[in-house]
Length: 115
Ligand code: 5GP
Ligand code: ZN
Image (cartoon, rainbow, N blue to C red; front, top):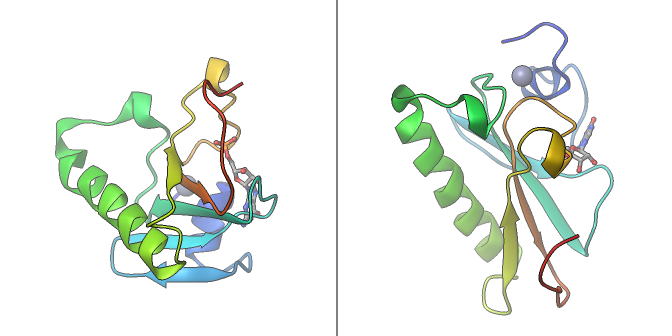
């Protein structure tokens, strides 16, 4: 838990969020600035800076994040039509919050390659 991390504050419920799913390890909530009709963030409760910083010991939580993405997509009824899972990592990918998070984006057709 990092005192000044915005996502740790969301985990601690010091900042309100619109929660979709929560268990002992994960929290999923609506992105405050959605890029599509459905835009959810899934985070581990453990403070990990980015995908660039993960270690072998994070294998289980990384698996849980993707399973969480799959469950959230089903729960929000975008699974069949399709959705995108994104982990922006460091500067070139424009990561802005340095607590690892998985974006689950759907509800409209998307283009490829991303910008
Ligand atoms: P990044 O650019 O780091 O991949 O994504 C960070 C995401 O967090 C952005 O999509 C941004 O809209 C979202 N975000 C930033 N602050 C908050 C907040 O306080 N609450 C919620 N729900 N989302 C946030
Ligand atoms: Zn954090």
